[in-house]
Image 1 (cartoon, one colour):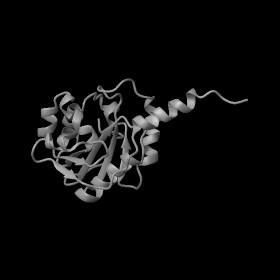
Image 2: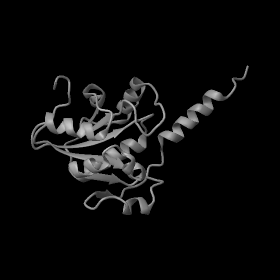
Image 3: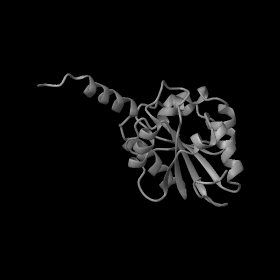
Length: 183
C-alpha cells in the first residue's frame, strides 16, 4: 500500500494542504509557505482532491495536479495524488488512512481562512477537528466572525494577504474563451 506514497518518518511534522486547486495560484502557495515557515513543518503535502464534494464538477484531475506542481515551490512542498490513490473522497478518510500508514508522523491540517466558513459542511467535520491540529492562514474574504466560529485550540496565523482566487481565475478564463475572435 505504501508504494509511491510520499516519504515521511516518525517524528516528522507534515502539513496537509488539501484542495481542488482548480487552478492552483499564488494564494495557495502563500498559504502553504506561511504554514511551512511559521509552524516549523518539515514538509507540506498538497493533497489534490479527486473531486471536492462541496463544489461543482472540477477541471480534469491531471490539469489540477500540474497546476499545483507549478505553484508548489521548493523541495519541502510535495504535490500528491494521494487521496485519489487511497480512494479517499473526504478529509476524514484521508486522515484515518494517513495515521495508519504513517505512525509517529505529526500531521497538521492547513487551510486558508476563506475555507473556514464551509468547514462545518464537511463530512464528519467533528472527527476531523478532533483528529489533528488545524492551522488557519489569513486570506482575503474571510470575516472575523468565521474565525470566532473555529473550534478552540486551532492555530490562526495572520499574514500578508494574497488576493488571488481559483474562482476569479476560472471566471477570467471563461471570459477569455467566450470572447469572439477578431478576423
